[in-house]
Amino acid sequence: MVKFLIFRGERGEGAFKEYEVPYQEGMVVLDGVLYIQSRFEGDLSVRWNCKAAKCGSCAAEINGKPSLMCKTRVEHLSQPIKVEPLRAYPHIKDLVADTSWNLRTRRKIIKDVGFKPRKDASWIMKDEDIEKGREFRKCIECALCLDVCHVLREHQLFDKFVGPAYLVFSAYLETHPMDSVDRISWLKEEAGIMYCNITKCCTEVCPEEIHITDNAIIPMKERVADRYFDPIKMLFRKITGK
Amino acid sequence: MERVFATSRRDIWWTETLGSAVVFLGVILYSIVRALEGKFFEWGPYVSPLYSIPFDTAWISPAVFTMWVPAGYRITCYFCRRVYYRSIFADPPACAVREFKRNYKGESAFPYILLNIHRYFLYLVVIFVFIHWGHAISAFFRWGENGSVKFGMGLGSLLILADTVLLTLYVLSCHSLRHILGGGSDFYSAERMGKIKYSLWKFVSRLNERHGFFFWTSLLSVAIADFYVRAVSSGAINDIRFF
Ligand code: SF4
Ligand code: SF4
Ligand code: FES
Ligand code: FES
Picture 1 (cartoon, rainbow over the protein chains, first blue to last red):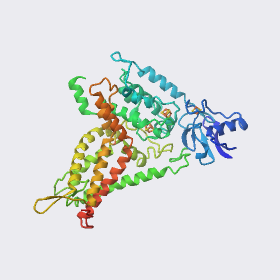
Picture 2: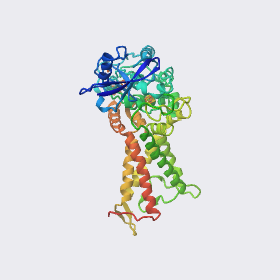
Picture 3: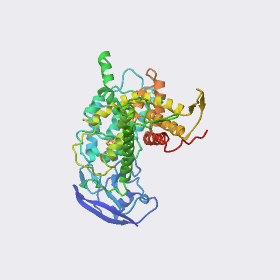
Picture 4: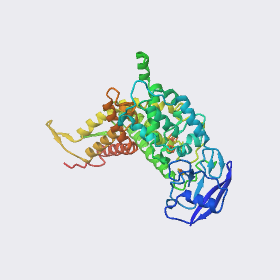
């Protein structure tokens, strides 16, 4: 048997309830949760779709670590396995949190600084030109990184900081060879990239193993530094007018 | 969930936080003590890595003149920032662990916004890397009485060489260097010198994956090499010579 502690309740109010589920080989946390839903608690709210770690909807906190329920094997976990909703976001019910901020943020990025292709280059690209973006494209928008990021989770700066996932998205647009949009001032002012203090929790939880901090955030911070925090470069730009 | 350090995590999350704090503060403290002591930086062919440029002043420890460059470089290093934000300022103490309530501004405001000066320390530290290589090479030679030069090797030569190699790898894996050498470009195949930029970016990126490892090992190797030089220079031990 596998012991589970599942958070039950609505709008942040509630408590953990214990359940026992028969163990099966290769069992993941989502199997246990769905077993509980089908046998004991028909009204247990849980979000999932693909059960293949690709849709990003089954994100929850398992033994305190933001994880995908469908990708986390029970045999690696200490019991009782504690499952709770993403804590950074407003709670709706049981294991479901309100992550609609994510969709709004993505839409806003596309509207404000979306991709506009260059006119002076060809779409036929070499491998080396798309190498950086390949990693960023793997993002499944599961929100694990957003949930664990202390800027959002602890300090709740949802209105000032777009969060790691959307910095990955921005880095993808920004490093695209055919892109013509200047996002540097947007990154600093609107995206709030300087709120990130590069403590790398996002990188630690990403199920797609994207090096969020090292490959997306820090390179973007360096570009912001080029424009705003590098006195010699700033002087050079003044003189040459570039 | 309201208490500071509250978490649902089951692992002993504070070991990493505490371990980093102890090593990090330990090396800082050691360096300060050594700078104040202000002597035993040289012995025979050895020059301590804490004392890169031989300045001779009577009124202030020579280490103070040179230490601010590597110290500033490390304090502004992206990896080092992660280390002290987590283990000294508990901001956050570890992932998904509650922290102190504060008016959080991250690196968007004073004082942490100043850390963006990192690239200037990088330019300076590159000079130091060359000086260190000079010291590392001369640590393998001894001057005889009649002006002859003899190749030789002691434990100190190896420690100084190891420190120099680690420092070099630490600098070569730097995020700012990665950006300057090619990371800032997006269209390598069409840009001027794009091929070179791409190769350099790839090279630094590969080392960059180990940047944290090089940070820690090069931090320790400075202290170890200096400790050894101090020990032989003060006469506490005899240099262990291989030939
Ligand atoms: S970056 Fe990783 S953790 Fe963040 S949303 Fe994308 S896949 Fe999930
Ligand atoms: S590295 Fe930055 S974005 Fe990632 S979790 Fe830490 S503060 Fe958030
Ligand atoms: S159900 Fe799709 S990622 Fe888990
Ligand atoms: S980022 Fe660590 S030395 Fe530059």
